Image (tube, rainbow, N blue to C red):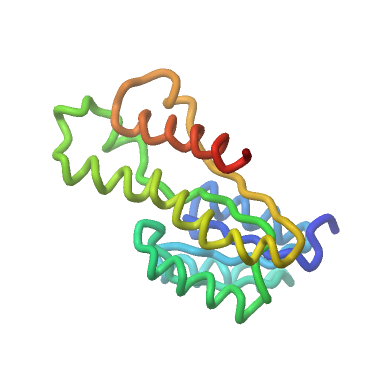
Amino acid sequence: MRFEGRTAVITGGAIGFGRAFARALVAEGANAVIADIDTDMAERTAAELVSTGGKAIAVDCDVADQGRVDAALAATAEAFGGVDIVINNAGLHLTKYNQPFGVLSRKEIRDLFDVNVMGVINVTLACRDSMRARGGGVVLNISSMAGYMSATPYAVSKLAVRGLTVAFAT
């Protein structure tokens, strides 16, 4: 098993791509931390993973709220000792936010950027010391082709994620 003994934090891990990432990592031996704002669904996903023989916990995590990110990572450290893999998957989605800037309110745009951009920053920086202490780690940021094909708030947020990926890698 490629990820035996490794711990993966998956933001937005309760459903969709996040759940699929968690399932794949657990199948390869990783401990999964289902970090999601929807704690009920996160609990169900973690329970499903445990029922298949995996190790998983659910943690409340609003990636836009640094305090909640820190609490989620404290719970991760308590359960599994630290973090080896981060998948920054949480995000506000294309449907609502794929409209011109003038259509959405500034609050909606701010909320989008707080989750899609600041969320990546918050989680990545919060995991840095744990990963370093464990000898390194991997951060995967989920973006979108929309970042290259549109000028909507959603697209710009996903283009920013691509920029953050490059910046954090240097």
